[in-house]
Image 1 (tube, rainbow, N blue to C red):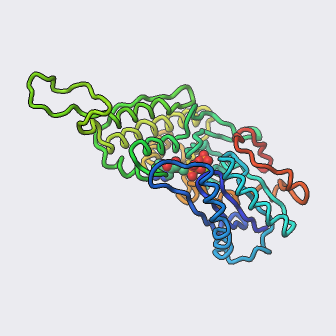
Image 2: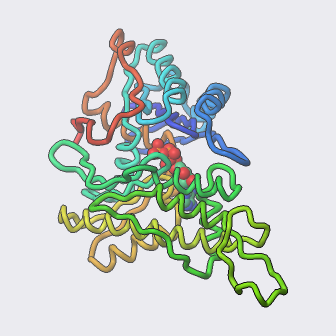
Image 3: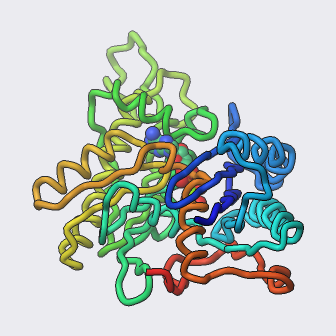
Length: 353
Ligand SMILES: Nc1ncnc2c1ncn2[C@@H]1O[C@H](COP(=O)(O)OP(=O)(O)OP(=O)(O)O)[C@@H](O)[C@H]1O
Ligand SMILES: [Mg+2]
């Protein structure tokens, strides 16, 4: 029974996990966060460098193994931020060189998908909603095919940008979810589904304008119209409450995701929907998917939150499957392995299924 070390470093998370026989024995991580503003890739890479050793030893301790017991190292090869991926890859190559064991390069997005096997999903359509990616994926003839995707921003990055305009730090998703539960009024936003794809940048601009718009100043003059057109920079109160905007954003954008996912179910004839990616932690998105699946007689699957966000457990999990099917690099071949920051889900030849 091989023991696999998994390493994740595509973006904000540096993670190390130990996996054996499909069981995640440890899944440790440290996540880059900010109080205000977003992620600067070089800062995140520095954060990973500073924390990698501590997380590695924590993962070994938690799994109760020493490094000599590791049979192969799997790492996130892409897609992701190049400076962050490089830290992970260089770290991942150290042990194979030292112990003469193989290296297994793993596609991060497919790992988000394959970890869904733990939920019991067999042949699902996957709604992959994370920071940088938003795709509707299903397996057909040797590849994971993309049936629909965002034409611009990933839904998590979109939510984080909205949060940044509202003065919320990174990641904003969990905070926005809480605010949304307090929203009571639906504010109309653009709804952008184009065939099987969605577009988010126009909605982001609209939300930004709404965040900045102010109600007119209260004046005693009966000569003034009751509601002047709102102007950015006016000194009145915000025209829209952040709670209502958060609520309306979720209702609109999640409906777009569910609509395209449902169409992919209808098109492929598949009977299972699997959620994945960090945005899938959102209870309202889960609820909307559950309702849609119930209405069309499909089964709904969603891994636990720790396996939805970026984590090394899913990298080790897919790494083990690939290793067992013979996909690995050894000896001098390890030097030729490089990061693939722009690798797409449908480029990967799936030889392990
Ligand atoms: N409860 C939540 N509601 C909405 N969004 C959330 C929630 N929890 C986390 N997120 C969002 O999930 C994203 C992080 O997800 P994940 O770790 O899978 O993404 P990523 O690694 O940035 O992107 P990718 O997997 O595409 O490389 C962030 O944008 C964060 O705001
Ligand atoms: Mg991810």
